[in-house]
Length: 199
View 1 (tube, rainbow, N blue to C red):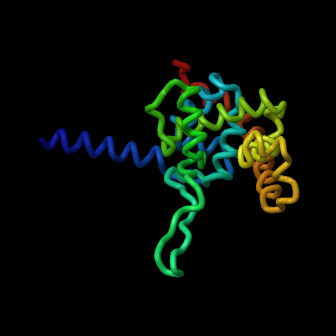
View 2 (view 1 turned 135 degrees about the vertical axis):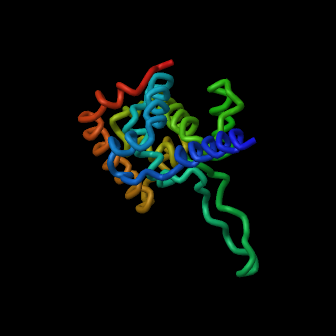
């Protein structure tokens, strides 16, 4: 009984550790040193859908700040009672329910979860692959990818992001994040790959 309790406790601690926010969110090398499983996740997502790790990280950082349980704030009903949330966005990638359902069908896996980093990274890479394929936005254009991610493929085509100063500023931040992450990973990717096995 005691052994089983210790085992369950160890599993619980491991789960908590895997969802803990990075201590240094601006340093890709430090993020993956802290969360080795995250490096495996972004590399597998890259192999599957094409988006580089730096782009995946940058979008997730902007969307949730690496908070696995992030949700839009609730509104207020009668100025006091908690109301509905602004959208169904949830998890690391702030994926909407409808878009997540599309991803589940494309991935062929109904067991994916929005609050699991592995699945969120795969989702971001899947969506970025669509943006590149359908809109022609290169993976190096993190700003364009974030605008399409936020507005949707149709919204991006219509130019719904134009004139939205807050969104444009957020997209510029994503570009800054991605550029910094890419430069950092150029220095430490060799070390990180020693931990990674693609199967």
